[in-house]
Length: 193
Image (cartoon, rainbow, N blue to C red; front, side, top):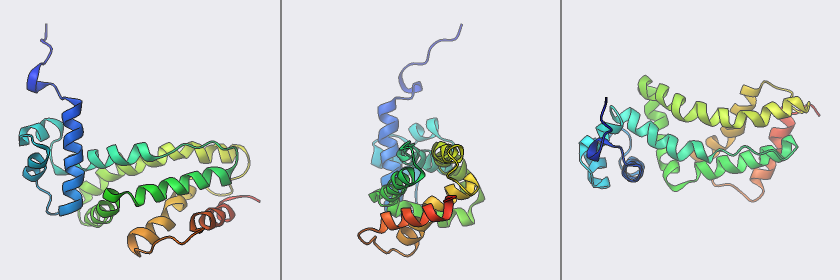
């Protein structure tokens, strides 16, 4: 009969949360290329072994931390209309992209992912795909109501792309009414009417 692990062998949720915060803060300050396991451990007040008990290396640690911050931020609105649901999704993407940590981290890890296929795959699996799957029911309902005129995957691409381009690539702040205007433009592009 196996003995139940105790002490250091048990992953403590509070310690994992502290480490996750340290990963995100260190990533925002140093960038992916300069991120060191030692610096994360120091910031979290743990030994490096605490990191390696949770993740096999830097890519897994970073993507787990980003997933923890990013995936729960996806709403699944059901306002009864495509426009209402789009407006909620657009607002959520805006809030995510302007989060103080995400705003500094996402452009860096996105450019690093171009050079690092392992990181790109991990980001897709742990952040991109789960975020898309959480939003997919919004568009499936729009298809069922006869409101969506394009492929669901294309619709998912279109919701975040304009905000990412404006905020993360161009670094241009939103003007008053921008999110409403974007919602209306997306509705025209996506809907049957």
